[in-house]
Amino acid sequence: MKIILLQDEKKLGRKGDIIEASDGYARNYILPKKIGVEATPQNLNDLKLKKANESRIAQEQLEAAQKLAEELESRQITVKIKAGEGGKAFGSVSSKEMAAAYKEQHNMDIDKKKIQLPESIKNFGTYQVSVKLHPKVTGTLTVKVTEA
Image (cartoon, rainbow, N blue to C red; front, side, top):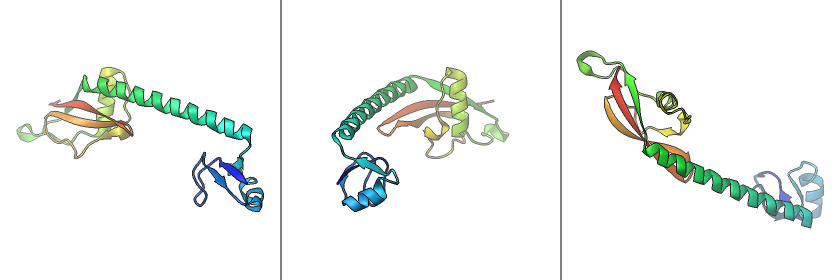
């Protein structure tokens, strides 16, 4: 019996896959637990439409991420931190502070988890920080660290 999986199942396959299962296994395990549905022409058509819609949404998200990446590269944020003795920075700049500064200065949210810091910023100056906006798109944000 052909089955369309409705969710990822470890030994069977991924969501949306069409698998071949024995009649007893399908009737007694897969269908009652709603892991999958029988691959009727109606269900196959629904799956095809759903996949087309998902690919269209994924393409729109990719284009939006590319647009945001271009916007990020044209902007700069300024983060102020306290200075200790001799003009050295007191503390460091975190991704949370960068996200808050971007929202304050440009009225747009950036998820702090998407800001990728190879190491903490502990000195004054200008830094290029990468922001992972999409699995295929990474933008660069210019961060200027000044004395408060």
